[in-house]
Structures are given as C-alpha cells and as structure tokens.
Image (cartoon, rainbow, N blue to C red; front, top):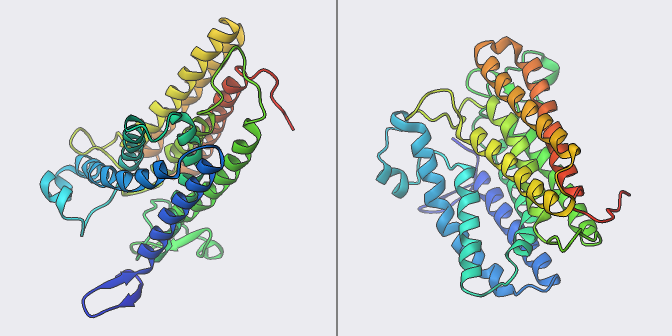
Length: 330
C-alpha cells in the first residue's frame, strides 16, 4: 500500500496524491503569474484549469486502456468511469490541455494563443516534475533497469521495485524536468529580447522548446519502464509515448524549417540539419529495437539514445536561431 498521509472516517489521503495536487497548483500559479504579467487576462487561466482537467482525465484514461488492451481487464467504459485502478498517460494530459487552450481562445478570453502556451510551458514543466516526484511515495518504481551495486541501492540512483532494486527512473525524470523548468524560465525571459526575421512570430517559441525537451526526455526514459505504453491492441513493441515524442520532435523541426525557408530561402545548412535529424532519430529507433532484444546492452543503448536526443534538441534549437535576427548568445 502507498504511504498514507491522512486518515478520516471514510477516506485515505496518500502522500503521492498530495504531491500531485501541489504540482497542479504550482502549474496554475506560475502560468497565472506569467500570463497576467505579459498582458493576458486572468480569466483565461482560471478557465483553462478546469477545462484542462475535464478534457485530460478521459483522454489520459483512454490512452491507458488503448495501450494496455486485454491486459487491463477493463472495458473502455470501465476505464473512463472507474479511476480506482490503472494509469493515466501523459499524452492524454498534453492533448487535453491543448484542447482546453483552443476552447479558451474560441471563447475569446485570449487573442494570443501562442503566448498562452508560452506562459503555460514553464508551469507545465514544474508541475510534471512534482508529479514525477510523487512516484517516490508509491510502493515501487516502474523501471526495468536493475541496480546490483549496493552503493547505488538508494536515492537518487535506485529504489526497491518488485523483488529487486531498480534504477530510480521517476526520480531521474523529476531532476531532469526541474532542469527543463529552469531552462524554460531562462528562455522565457531572454527570448523576448530577440528580434525575429521578416515579421516572424515572437510568441510560441518557449512552448516549442518545451515540446522538444520533454519529448526527447520521454523518448529515452519511457523505454526503461516495464509499464511503458506498449500498444497491446496492435503489438507488444511499439510504445505510444515514444511515437508521440518522435512525431512532436519532427513537428517542431517542420515548423521552424518552414519559417526558416520563408525568412532565408532554402539554404544548404537546412539540408544538413534535416539529414542529421533523421539519422539521430533513426539511430534512436534502432537502439530501442536493439535494447528490447539485447537487454544486457542497456547501458550502451541508453547512452547512445540519450546522445541522439541531445543532438535532435540542438538541431531544433539551431532551426529556431535561423529565424532570429540577432540572437543574444550570452
């Protein structure tokens, strides 16, 4: 049983639920502060929160049911109505929050949707970091990577999972999401000083960098989880989060490539970025296939996979710089 923080006559309040609530509150407060400080209306954020939860819960549960398939022992209706068992997939939360933002825009509470996403991105990173931290208050981690050295059988390296010590995947994700949060806040402050080429949009870049960094992190770390979102209804190998991450990384590159071509023309440097991007993404896919068959190679595979994701993050950032007039490189 998960550690209990509070017991009433009828309810149990778990520590992981408290940390998750703190994550949602942190996301809301930071988004509100950033959006209102940059000309946004507070009502837009107040409406975004309940709509985001309303849309995210069923979508997160749908993707859980779709990926788990027959192993979940639940019908679709049970997955959407009974929240006492099973998981919630982050893909559904991202889509649900994005849909909520579109509704807020359609209702006229904001005229600048990219700016709303920019202000939401740092808060989302902080919220996800705390949600990942909440997993240390559960009965086990979900990593497949064993930790046999007693020196590393403790946080921040290892947690005791089902029957053995395993790598603390969620704690690692917590640390990395905190780093992404810091980078996004720095990017949020600095990017407003950068003039753009030929009337390129000034807003939306923080959100696109958030998508890039989050996708790169999840593409690697989701591979190490034994509960990863393998689509059992289709096959037991393809993982939903990794597919979504790859599509998101490619989408960001396409957006900046189109803008770069409009601003600079089709330059040879852009071809180089495309080639390196697809080589790095192909390498990551091959390494995922390899580590599923040669599990004792996990250290080499995950190291190279991480290197390929860092390369893709650098490529997307370089594509962003190509539409900046005079970026401040300090």
